[in-house]
Picture 1 (cartoon, rainbow, N blue to C red):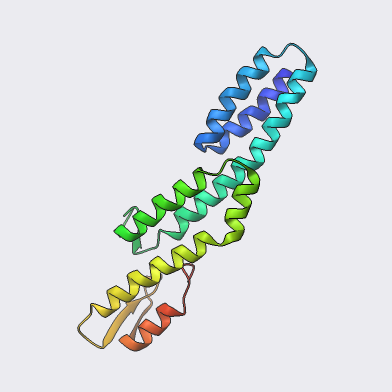
Picture 2: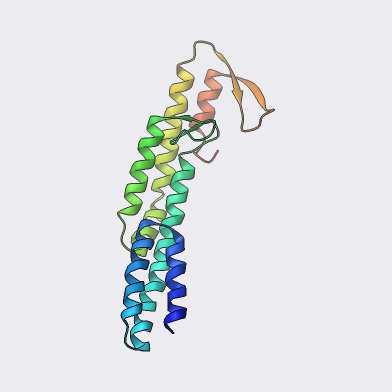
Length: 169
């Protein structure tokens, strides 16, 4: 019984969030100290709940990271992308918000609130609007996420396109 319980703890640990790793350590010690199958089962209930909570947290953390990292501009500046301070600031705020949640219900409510989508869309729109407005020419050469896809667009059309787009576009 302890061996299968430790397998569940290992699953929790493998999620990789700081809370999952911390909880796995705590539950591992509780299982090792358990004096009966009933005690192990009691800890397993908590482990199962923690797995659900931490998988939700990981999904939200991954979404926040994805929402702030594009092909050409990103929060991290990884790869060929240029680092953008406003995306970095947003990412840190989102990660902090997500990691401040202590229950599955809080995490699910955060997801349902659309906070990541709304804030990421706003920051991306502000960034691209500023970038476009900073150009002196009215015809802009735009590059899509393909190496071979280039096109011209007026500043007005580019600004309209940005205003109508979400972070996912």
